[in-house]
Amino acid sequence: MSYKEAVDRGFGECRARRFDCRLKEAHRTGNDVWKVKFFASAPGAQGHLHLDYDAFSRNLLKVDEKVKARRGDRDDDDWDDDDHHHGRGKKKGHARHDD
Image 1 (spheres, rainbow, N blue to C red):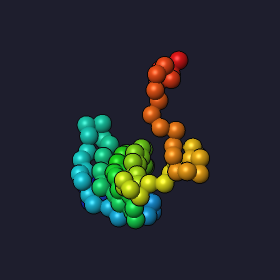
Image 2: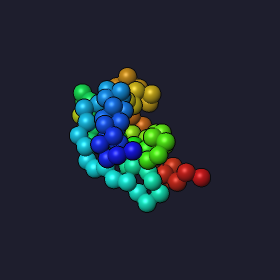
Image 3: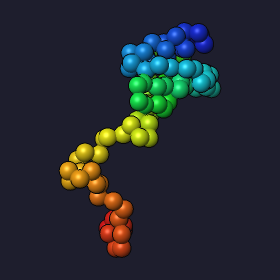
Image 4: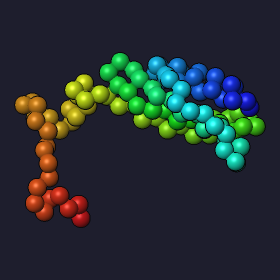
């Protein structure tokens, strides 16, 4: 697999996940794995997408996707809301020690 093919496959995978992507870097390691890294964004979210491809079989070996909502756009903690838009807050006293 060439550099161009690794990057093209990476862009395809990124688009399949419905992200806007910018290539951060791509390189081949000594153990014949292409590591392709992107800055990824979606409406209201941003982060990174790292992909590992086998240089010979062209198989996707590993995906590290960390795309999170931007501050202020988050509303993913509804599970602990009490209808007053208060979360559980910071643990205090002995409760901060998870036994």
